[in-house]
Image (cartoon, rainbow, N blue to C red; front, top):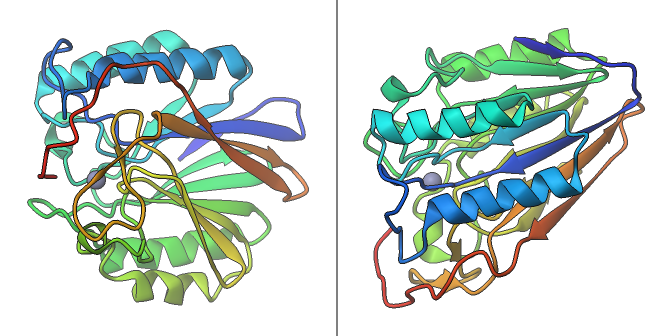
Length: 267
Ligand SMILES: [Zn+2]
């Protein structure tokens, strides 16, 4: 559990996702250099939001999940002097990175009247996702204990179909188990996830579920087969007020990278 405190009634947090970093910084992923676009995104975040309270990375830090990749990511993030948190994605190797969910525990970040609960939906050697019963039980308990708090839940995989056949094969597979827990509580304000490399909004039970663009390549929305999107890399910002109101928007950062390869056909 982490507490971030200051004398304020509002908080600004940024969600980044799917950095897909390589083991060496000069290598490309789908002919885009993910290191360059990640750094460009972080520069934009710092310029636009110098008073940032936290950064949450919703997974797939690494495309090549080896210690060198994670060491470079950590060194870069530490220099920013902003509290930062990560959730493992399907491409990540939890043994090589100090993810808070190492033991499949929910990690709670407290910012005044808000609590962000990070879940692990990644399953070793699988692209699709699942949240284990032990974590769901813990989530249930935390939601009860924080009944007076405004809660944001975050995981890597998309709980609801994106109307994109290939992407939806890789969704969270036990969404019904998650929504069963969520339905018992009144304090969840939003759900955040990555994995789908696009901006989206689904509403369930009056709760918005947001996905966030990758800091590298984008996937084309509503495509039955694998296809890349033409949108620029991006991130999501959320402004949280202590009265429970919030607003959110996605920023895209143009001209970070050169030509991307649309001929690629794998995930
Ligand atoms: Zn993923």
